[in-house]
Image 1 (tube, protein in one colour):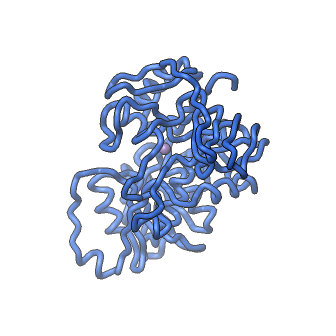
Image 2: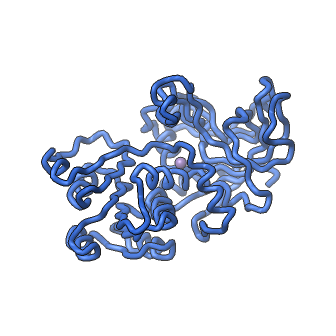
Length: 341
Ligand code: MN
């Protein structure tokens, strides 16, 4: 079978490997249908993901059809359409005991620490699959994982109906945060520097858009929120300045949700946190968000029109990565189609 592998930083190839076999009673063999390319895959390709171990079959956003199951598998059978939850955790460390396997002390992410979904077939544990309706197109199903990231930001920020949410950045993750916070009943403001991205955010339900290049972000947000500031601010810009801006613009009793892996320290005076009693939280991967996103899709509440920018067959995987690299400002999601549609 074909696999897409980053042999070492900068070297991305299509290679051949034997089809994996069901070995454990809880194993599920899946024929992969689609794999989404994430910004983090590009970082792995360029050697800029501190967690990646090489050589690595990339891909943590993938969907497919079950072709074989271990003797103990109960929830899926041959032919079931599934999305794979790409995290493997121990279940016993402190974080796991809190129900937060996404930050397990021995966390393994498929496509990062262990091999991922860019292969024609993959074996995963039954615990890692979520059932999809057969009617859901693969090109939409492959977007579930990215939307769980937005769902996690919404959950971590404890977004309530009626809250003003500011989403900083209208890239892929910012857009998923926008759609999930809208579904939670918030009034959502999106800011970015690129007019096209803001225009698309508007079509995805943004109540207000602010081009921070042309308008004063702080003034504008205060104007929209009656002087209060945003109740929840989600940082999907992820630089030193954006984190500082989040602290500044968030209202009293507000929440700041940080999505950045940036290592540059920001300058934040503690008084600016304490005077508003801000809650600042990280949001990494997701925990228990797959069912949330799948339910929204089942109910037809999560329109995904236009979210996939381009699709490539696996044979053109390298071109697909080059396309994402060259168009990082405008790409929302590029998807790889596996053989056999
Ligand atoms: Mn991703």
